Length: 83
Image (cartoon, rainbow, N blue to C red; front, side, top):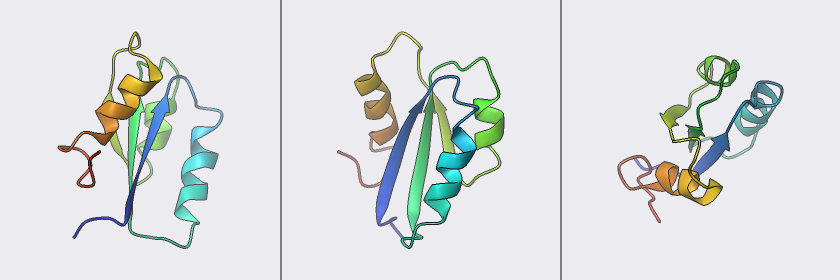
């Protein structure tokens, strides 16, 4: 079954904020949500902390633009909703 929506998060060294963000997403009324975290080579605990949540984690080159990171997360193999 396809999720009702996909959320693509581009992250780089967001350990101070990622838990709050992912907790907030889980608390929403829409429950069939796919969350894709596109990590841009974080050197902190961003990926470790995000791994405790039901998210799909992919890695993107730190040199890519934010739009390239969102495109990576929204590509058809990752998100059934695609662009």
